[in-house]
Structure formats: structure tokens, C-alpha cells
Length: 294
Ligand SMILES: Nc1ncnc2c1ncn2[C@@H]1O[C@H](COP(=O)(O)OP(=O)(O)OP(=O)(O)O)[C@@H](O)[C@H]1O
Ligand SMILES: [Mg+2]
Image (cartoon, rainbow, N blue to C red; front, side, top):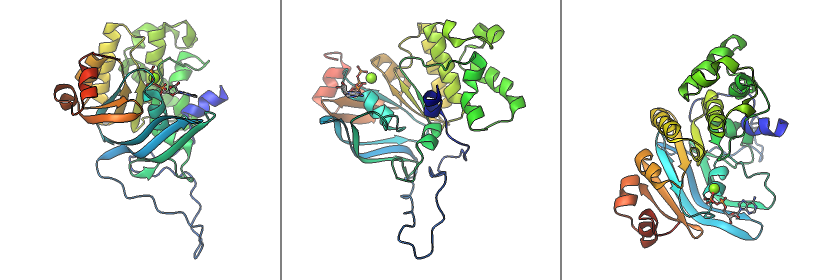
């Protein structure tokens, strides 16, 4: 539980894009060689980026030489055959692989220009600013209400007397309110898998992240809930930068502004979704988006 909470939370911090990731940067000492290096200049309009990134587990390299930018306020779909590294890449965008035995990374990830993996960057700050929804729902062993506000409370983002309103707002936002309004104090584990996923989405949104990472978020949802979640993501996307892994090419096509296709250990292609689907630059992409493999 403590670990699960840590994966969601970090101490209170400013919430505007561009605020740096260094929670407690020591004051530079005059003349000290140990003064922290200034963060790289923010790339205008880019929420997150990967530069020459390679990711490995032990001696197995999953991805190498990945260059990818996520423009602020856009939705990017990550697609590719099973095992091509989509989840590994997504998890690296909020340092979720840090404690995985054997995980290694080279290259640079940035969040609004800050180096995500700088020694002074706090992974817990990263994980509040870059929220994540996993493929399998992971409610905490708390009540439904306490799940929604877990991160809000941990970061002291709102006074206690506002927590009930936050729960209602977020549960309404994800379309779960009517189903759970009369059992906010109950365990989430009696909810269906799809409802648990919506609860986790409400929890992720409650801390108002700058970026939301979603790993096949609708694979356990029915078509009506899937459509509702897609509509919600569209509504959110001008304010939140969204990166979604999906095997559902129709979903990638109707939902995303940009699509990145991973294949055989590389980023084979990335660009505007329409271009990637209509006029792919690579033959592998063409075969994949026309359903020839994967
Ligand atoms: N914790 C780990 N330890 C060792 N190898 C791992 C670990 N996690 C993933 N891998 C390996 O990395 C490769 C990429 O896995 P990943 O889960 O990122 O693929 P994916 O594209 O998300 O696949 P899928 O579409 O099936 O979800 C696979 O070969 C997998 O076995
Ligand atoms: Mg995966």
C-alpha cells in the first residue's frame, strides 16, 4: 500500500507547466563547483520529449535511438505489435521503471524542458505531474471516496472540506457518479473491472496532472464507456497532454492527433495521425495500419 501510494504521490508542489521538477534544490553556494546545472531551456510548445532514448532490461535492449516529441495539449497514440516496447516506453515517461531490476536507460527525457532523469529531479514530483493509468485497474484498498482523493490529500492540494466535492466532480467527469454515489464509503473491489478503471482515471485526474499516460485504458471497458472515456480525453486534451497506448487502431485514428509506431526495437515512424494512417512513410507502418500484422 505504501509503495502504491508512493507511485501516485509526492509532497506538495507548484502545479503550473514549466515549474521545475526539483523539489528541494539546494541553494547554490557561491564559487561551489557543486552548484546545480541550470535546466535545459524549455522547448516551446513541447510538453515531453525523448532524445536518443534507449531502454533495456539486463542485456536485452527493448528500444533504441528513440526521438519523439509530445506537443503540449495534444493526444499521441503509441502503437505497434505486442512486445515492441510501448508499455516500457510509457512507463519511462514518468520514471515508473526506476525500481525495476535490470532496467537501464540512456538518452534524455524532458518535461517542459526539464530533464526528467536529472539527479536533482524528484521522481515523486514527476509522477504527480505525469499521471498514469495502467492497463489493469489498481484501486487502493481504501473506500471509493478515499481512492479519488488519495493524491489530493497526500499533496495537500485542497482543504479537507473540499474533498467530498472533488470526489463528486471527478466521478461525474468519468461517468461513474450515478453508479457509486450511494456507496462512496464502500470498497472499490466490488466494482466491475471497467468501473475500477474509471475510478482510477478519476483518481489520476484529481491531482490535475500536466500529462496523462494511458496504457490500453479502455481494453476492459464496454463500447459505451469507451466512447465516454474517449470523449472525456478529447475534452481534457487542450489542458492536458495525453499519451495513449492502444492496440485498437480505430481508436488511435479517431482519438489521437499524432501517432507513433514502434517496431522491431525502434520508433519506425511518428507524425500526424492522418499522415501515418493515410500516407505512411515506411512500408512496415503501411502493413501494420492496414492490419497485415500485429
Ligand atoms: N520488467 C521486465 N523485465 C524484463 N523484461 C521486460 C520487463 N518488462 C518488459 N520486458 C520485456 O520488454 C519487451 C517489451 O515489453 P512491453 O511490455 O514494453 O511491450 P508492449 O509493446 O507494451 O507489449 P503489449 O502490446 O503486449 O502490451 C518485451 O520483450 C518484454 O518481455
Ligand atoms: Mg503493453
